Image (cartoon, rainbow over all chains, first blue to last red; front, side, top):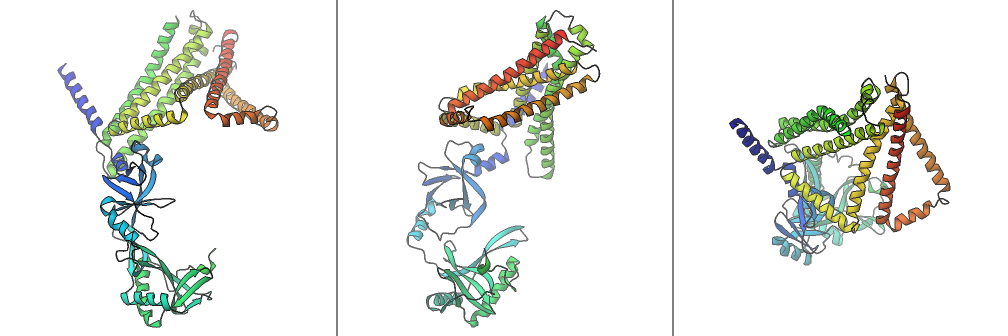
Length: 253
Length: 269
């Protein structure tokens, strides 16, 4: 009888262990779930409130690859992936954006006034840089990076875009190198500025217009700096730029 | 006498199914125990996956053995040497059939309960709580969208599940009963009847589809589809009810044929 009681107590404790133990997968799912507030303009995620920013086409935060799911408050965690709306969250968890359609961006409440203010004041984009993805051997993962142009070359780009000689792009054989972005100092805001191409050894800025492709030639004195950048870009991305990267917009589709 | 028949039927099933249930519960308990040591290591991964595989195999075994036991028991008890004893009992063929089929239904129900119990063990703790929350949420959402029809749908689906289960058992009994009419290789004959039945049902289905596609309009198929589109919630009741009735009709045909053969054409080994 005593042994039977001991066995019973042991089994009860054992069963209670089951009842109070958690599950990693469930904890992960809980971390990925956020909730809509009283209105669709607010979201709460990991204890923080996020408010919807004014629409801004140049806002460019770095988002994580993993999706999170925003649901109504009463949706259980097991159903969040099926019933929730898919969102992306930035690496610093300041921004949350919809993964489809309208691309509404929400900002954490403590940074909302600052960011929305920058949007309303039409944040000035002053630096030129190249945005690329490289593979990190140490972390064995892909990493997004920026390769900025020097202040001198950036100033030259500004000058050329304002005053440079614009010509129609008639050449068929040219090497497309990469797209150059115009960004804010902290790279949070950016937009596509132009494409850098090589035409018979000379570098040009190329952009699209209603009439077709237009080009502005870059003075030869900047070739060395551009080629230094191309070397870094080529090493980082493993793309061979000697013969261009194979993409010729003239003949696409 | 029928009560005694039930008792012996259940005892016979218990001898086979109780150890299977014990294995199923044991494996689910083992899996839950392994989950207590959850980590990212290879050893845990191998142990967890192995226990899950064992668990799934146990479930399949429990379900399959119920049917295999039902079929072998029906065959051995009524159409082999045991049949000489069975048919000397003061029990009619109808009662024999009822006892056997009702016992199988009951054992299937118990197997289902044991499987649900094992699922509760494997998911006990946080996960089980979340599962119940999810079920409650889905039920409330379904109730909202189905506007009061949900409890009736649930009842109808449960009845349909019961009827289809009964029909499938009767179909197996029908195949065995027809198979025993053969002089030799009765089991093979029963398998042949099963395949013949399957091909016949496919042929009837194909002919039915051809007739519907050619004469659909005259037969009022368009009107039927319009009614379903206009009143989907009400139409679902008709569809579920009609399906249950059809299956019931099928099982009644199987039952009556089995009874007639056992009564008039019994061919014991």
